Length: 367
Image 1 (cartoon, helix red, strand yellow):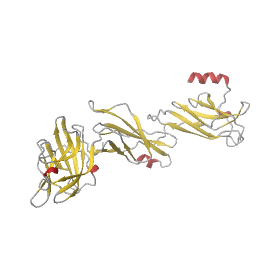
Image 2 (cartoon, one colour):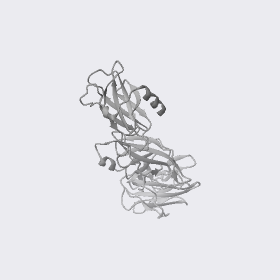
Image 3 (spheres, one colour):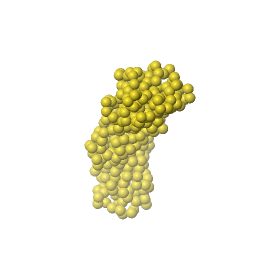
């Protein structure tokens, strides 16, 4: 690419900076020359640059020569010729560019102003990247600090993701663009439950300057469902048990008879009419998630590292409960949020993490 520039330089007379005409007074000069960088994921190495300008008001232009130079002390080189008022230069941009007008006789009759490419002026990296584990999806959110730094300069965010190497406990280097957004949040969908993935975010200005990356965030989507309907054993024994995963029939969220020996929980009614949640087999323990009601199933962040027991806990509307399930492939975690309680049954939302030993049920903690 650079060899072709040198060859063209022999054929085309070049001008020094001091010889450039004033585009504000020259009717043959292209005006309003501006650029937009093409983000690459590496702030100091854009994937390219897009130049735009307005055609001269004289109407004599039949084509445009684009010149650039590697530094402000280098000689100008002819980069390309185009009949358009835009030009895309792939790769790391040169330091400066200008555009010259060609008339019908192939003479240069006017020149634009010079634009200097600044790769150092960037927005700050987005901060506070957090995530919510969903069913086959991850909801990302972050601080508005990049937008707050310069509302006029901000254009959009780029969201990146990569595989997670569980054996080494690191995010791999195979980052790809997950998508873009103008909001401080992003939903990554069509994911595989139980498979961890890493995410990061950058902020991009209107002229394409990309910020440094946010801190990476690891998360794992998990199964969930709303409005499971389970009776107390005293009301209906045929539907008073629940399995987060029925390993025999390979089904999730199964309401079953209390006589089954593979249940995860049952609902029991005490003499005062209250309903209680009970671990249903050896290997299942549970605990109250918090001493206050939670707003939603997604409020249940991670399974605690301790505090589980085999005792029953009263089912109260709005409260959340976390389960530790011992299975053949290891420990799994699950959670429910009770939505409604009567004398005979409870209605709850539930989440189940299919990845063994993975405590993520909703929101990963801040780093």
